[in-house]
Length: 236
Image (cartoon, rainbow, N blue to C red; front, side):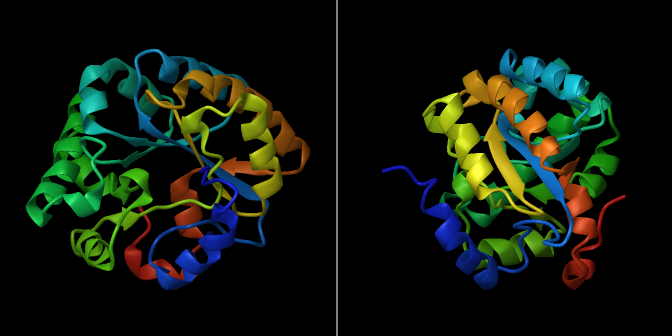
């Protein structure tokens, strides 16, 4: 059973139950955040970066530490091009299956991998790379409490076209077209599942959304317009 048709129905309920997560941006601004999970991938991500550069779009990437170590130069290129970087865990293990110690280590290992690949001070990365998207979107209230206590910012999404099952580029484009609204936070994938189609999808949706009057922003920019979450200290 495909999840994509159901998500627009349950997302508002999840957002109300877990308001400390970033689910979307301001509903009164024609902005959209384009985000990508599960990378960097040695083949799919470079092609995606070229596509984003062609369209002059700054996106947000949620990386797996293990994948950063496999493709450090790709990570460095994405960072150097100005894309926003977040954490997706060291491996793609769902957070509820990790102990508290394992979860903390997974996030810290990913920060260390980013620091090494992007040639950044580890202390800088620990302070500034704090957006976390749970693999598979799975978390518990206890996990959210832990993430906040460690200084991380949990990020979810509002548009889930389910590209990882590869239903076809046209299907994904239509799902995005039907679900998009002001402040939408779109999740796509540039990893081993979904990455095969990511360039074709982005090449289609960016002109489509720009023609509809939308501006592309980063996840950090969405945080900046969340006044009720000011205590989470937007990063600069």
